[in-house]
Image (cartoon, rainbow, N blue to C red; front, side, top):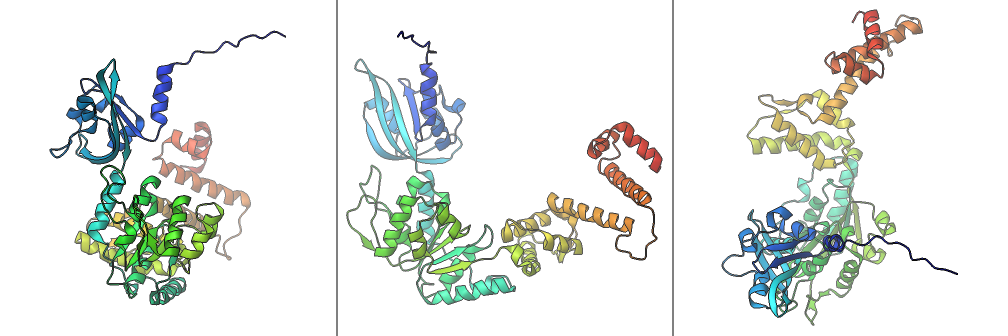
Length: 468
């Protein structure tokens, strides 16, 4: 048997290296012996919010500002030959944006001479900002049950259930679509409980990368990595009070397991620490889908769900409590009257009907944004009309008007209307539809014909027949 070598296309190694550098999930930045950038991968552009053209072939210190209190670990590696591991560094890009990274920096040595330096960076900017906000705030709560707007039976039912939950410290899971007001209920439960004078700390689990969430939740011990300090996590910050974990189904499974252990043992261990610390925290979680679906999809551990849902509340979407739309609308008008120094009284009858018919996929938040947008467009009017609403509402109103006009034309609702041959009725419908299309396209024959799906000649023939 004979064998024949396959002819293989040679690999372009430069292209391979470039693709590998852009595929890794860490920032890589390399400079030559003059301090000029020669490698700047995709992740680094994301971390530093800079384009490659802004950085490549430019001196590092001309692009980034490291302040007077510290110097670049990358430049240190170039000038001193020093290797730095897990060093935290805060600096600014050329637009003044603050960046915080954990760096591994080392020199490139050839024949005993330093010819450049490389830095591998992990972004912790977002984590630093969140920690600062939580430490400064401890999150004052503003909402109580009397501020939740809704007289409908579905809303009153969930309010009553939530009020009962204020009597204990059991975990509460609040389920509801985006924009239904889940955090309002969480704040109200906290403010109505014995913990109301203690901290209320809130964190959206979807807003923080998975690799940083553990530090944020449980805190860090000095020495855990270079630059690490003794810093309390969210559980310690909320000790004695309430911790709200928003979108709990966004938390990765390994962290869900650690969260389960904290709930069971009522203690946390900071990253890098050897000791556990007792915490007394009431946990409230929110989820923007049915928990049963989240469990089935593997987004939520079943054992954690049972721990977190001792009390389960389901906030109804706005389309299931349409009788509350008018109350909420007036509330938001009053709110933006005060903010914008305006005196809008209400909404027109047409707007009221459009609001009742709308599905409100964004729920109460969508309604508020709609009112705010409309009040930005009106001038001296004291009523919000269809003309000041977003395009989707205006389009719906035109459609409804067309249907009503067509119904009137055909006398569909008039049982005593004169009986006429089908051919005459159809001619009236055709004429009406062509008129509407012409008006919509400013009597442009080509555009109208295209809209109707007929030729220009056919449209012109019909216009002559109908005297249009």
